[in-house]
Image (cartoon, rainbow, N blue to C red; front, side, top):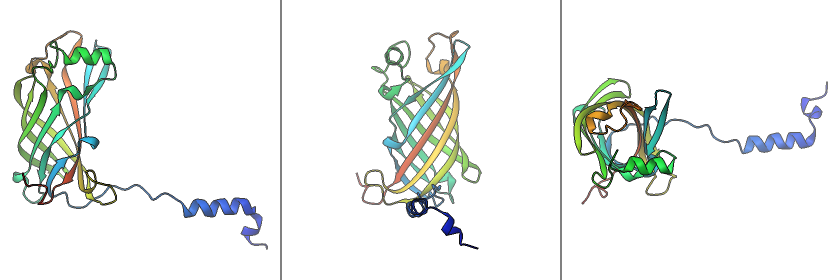
Length: 214
């Protein structure tokens, strides 16, 4: 019996060897310790919001820029904290006319209230890599307490990325729902849902001692 390789055309065999040699490594989630103080990477973080439109379909928009820091210590969750600042003018609903209206006085009024700010007050673990982050959300000049459900995605060293993105990274997804009317965003109460779902995806770069200096 002839070997199987004899039955494979030479060109096909060469292509198979080349594909094997250049096979892409499998994507994997890093599972190292997330402990440390992190600076939020605005280039890999995003706030997404979803609101019901005229009782027909939910509409989604984003804030493209996030700044701030967070600290995480799995052994001492009472020490965990986060401060997040969102420039209102980074809003994007993918419809320029609508964005202009939302940034105006009927909605976010970006000229008077240029930032959205969240400052945490406590964190309570609810399971492996999960927890509830409580804090105070200031939106449209009004502050109310909110609770985010937080899920850790990954953590670990990513040395091949250049600065300011590379280093020791960790990432989280946090979700909550707020009542926009409580924050003074009262336009079109019959056409737009009062509840707004919020999803925050954050990637942070762990800060070394040098980068913590003022």
